[in-house]
Length: 70
Length: 353
Ligand code: SF4
Picture 1 (cartoon, rainbow over the protein chains, first blue to last red):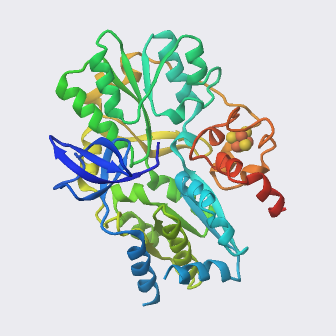
Picture 2: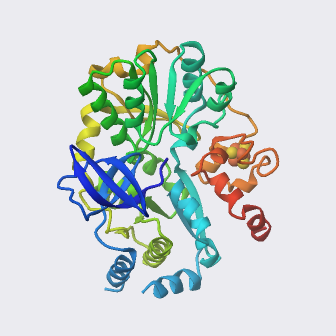
Picture 3: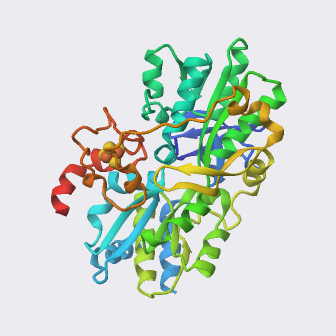
């Protein structure tokens, strides 16, 4: 139940969003995020998009490791 | 850059570092992705209490079973809870006795089920941390808006802040659960660092993110002063999700919750506010206090506090397996016992000895 699913938003309507997670489409609540738009990547938990995802993990790792050295 | 991180976790030598992966999903991913095999022997990963199914008390399962068998209620639940043993029955065993139990992926599905079945009383088992509670609140909001009266929540929600403080001596540093902090933000981690000397890093869930978070923890621990680093910034923002927090506190308030292993901790959970009591299954169905008990041989309580590794439980892999679980930590897809069992725990057990 706690595993988050990352997906791409394909449609937003009436507080719900359709997301594409590796080809599987799912309708999830968009109530927790303001200004969700098609094309955004989100993390989904228990049927609700809980956060936007702002980059991939490679970029993130580079940033975190650079900060560590600084 | 990931190579730098791998080098750090591989080559560390020195004082044994005890890092607690608070979150059960971290425990499982760390095993599944082979992260453990990368680590120097001087880095000890300890599993913590962050699996909501695992810390849910036997009493709660007994309450749900009672609702299903005696009050003829339809239980809607996340699948993970079904096999958790109650005093007499698990929910899946109760099914064999005629209980109606529906597995749902999202709390909202439970309300939709209730709406489509107006002649049934439907109770959703609201179990989870800050990550999952907003979804229960979305469901409740929908039920109120649509006038769905045959729907209620049986809550056993938990929140992490009290647990972080309670467990601080179990480890040198936390791998904070990424998705809890996606909701509550990182202010708490800074507060814990500044006021209580608790160190930690927020970690994501991909293999690269996990290795990086551990590398950061290992590096910072050597500086020997409390620290906090957000190693999952692509998802976790300092402010978290204010909309989610607002939603939670619109419907819920802090409650004293009992955690398996940790006992009852004041303010460590969330229950429905009085004004929503008609949606509170405990009140609606007048559930009496339960005095359940688990199998006395099960050592989940010690596993959840990081005091023992699952293989130190005498039941592990013998009478207790995922198919025939004795305790919640073996049932849950996020439990430490199931992680050790499923991903070569038995072999590792030989290795560790
Ligand atoms: S191995 Fe089974 S019985 Fe032992 S602590 Fe884990 S869940 Fe409990």
